[in-house]
Amino acid sequence: MKLSAVVQLIDGYSRAPAEGIAPRFLLNGTPCLAHAKPQGFYAFSELADGAYRLTALALAFFPQEVEFNVPLAQPLADAIVPCLLEPSPLYPYPTGTAVIRGQVRAALTGEPLAGVVVQADYRVARGEPRQAATRTSDYGRYDGRYALAPRPRLAPDTELTLTFSKSGYTTVSKQMTLEAATTRFVDIDMR
Image (cartoon, rainbow, N blue to C red; front, side):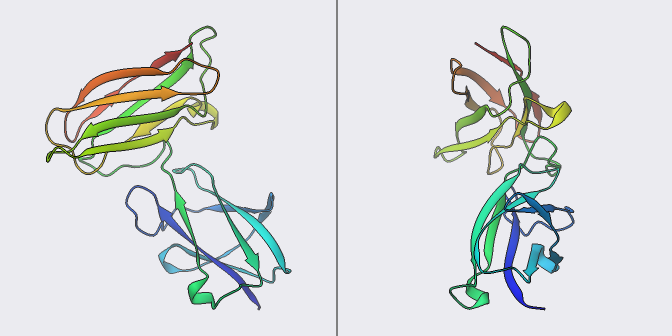
């Protein structure tokens, strides 16, 4: 077996290796199999020389693409391709995490809007400004839904501004207070 590439899937929320998520992979748009290894590593073998685009698919995360070339230009240990997976609305946030969930719809039609950028601007307990962002899903019954967890853990009564933006629609901002370790639901209609 000729080892061609190694990708490590990283959980974008915990920043730890993404283990136990049963990913699927597309290599240049075609389904492919990878050899699963500990610590979120996936090995690809017997690939012809050339440029590749790998898409990682897992329910709790948005699809993520990475690119690599075969043969590797450096030793394998230095050529591991990190793939940071952004949590989707299905992500199982840990207990005690402050989370904002909701759905974004087109005001005129009531249809869910996928691909809306949802951004939270806030200050941590020491007054430092922070941002957290995600986007709305395009996955079946989760169309237009989002889940956003500002980090690090929030102080009580953290004030934040949520901004919703998508090309072709007017940007919407909403001020709110988020308690530590709670879930708030914020649905938005965009024009």
